Amino acid sequence: MKLAFIIDPIAKLDPTHDTSVALMEAAQQLGHEVWITEAPQLGIDRSRAFAWLRPVQLTPVSLEAGRWQAPPNWYSTGDPAWQPLDQMDAVFMRTDPPVTIPYLYATYILDYIDLAKTRIVNSPKGLRAANEKLYALQFRQSIPESIVTQDKRVIREAVEGWGFAVLKPLGGKAGEGILFLDSRDRNFNSLIEVSTQRGREPVMVQAYLPAAKEGDKRVILLDGEPIGAVNRIPVGQEFRGNMAVGGRVDTAAITERDREICSELAPTLQRDGLVFVGIDVIGGYLTEVNVTSPTGIREIDRLSDVRLGERVVEWLEKS
Image (tube, rainbow, N blue to C red; front, side, top):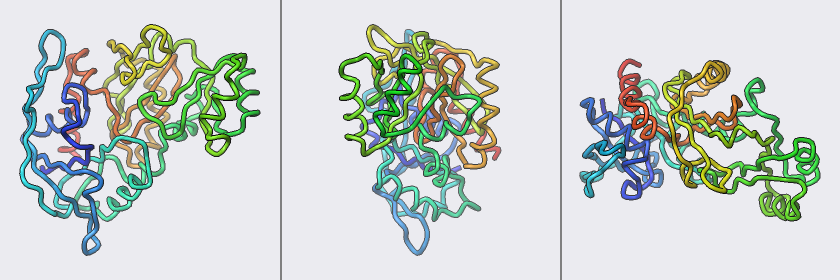
């Protein structure tokens, strides 16, 4: 197969952590061609989606003393060529959030790929439909108490009822801008004003789950099925478990409750073409559905001695 990956600049990726690199390595090791491009390098030519595509060769990471190690020159690329994306067997849209206007334009360009020839992971229509905070709200059997608003009075009333809460910007990633709310905090009003751009942007506010101290579990789903998990545990005075803010990672089993959540999600994910997804679970509650560039494969592979990237590519081969 020929696989194209739409990624952020490859020189900025961390091969020991980045899931996109893990997927590309797996494809290469299974004998497939790997090509890369970036969202600003997409376009439409004669009503077909095109991109400046470069072939890439990767030197896989190795596990040494319990850590992934990569050589300094871990990739090499060929010359770029302006090619139709439907010459690829699959295209992975792996550009990191936030979902900006240019990001949305890139998904519209991907709509011009002939789906009879090429699979897109994840579907551009699904990416547009699935804000990673709001999308979770439709799964009412799985989520904690949650509101979305820009109204300070509504937020205060909810937090006073819950005791404590967590505020999340709707377009954030990797824990950015997430706040712990206590209605008794003298800075409460200011925190809400800053987060909502003085009442101009809605935010999500969820009841604080004390189980967050024990970890924020990332579960990876492939076509609606959970295939691996990792626990992200807050360190020190930090209440967030995200790896990007220093959260410690540990092994995590996929529990019966996790499977119940995935069963609730699966039909909707499949309807929306969301094949490769990462969900966040705290204390048995679904808190987010990550669809743009879910991460966690490197950590799950290292801790659980599996190769999830190969499983994703083998699923593609069969599908």
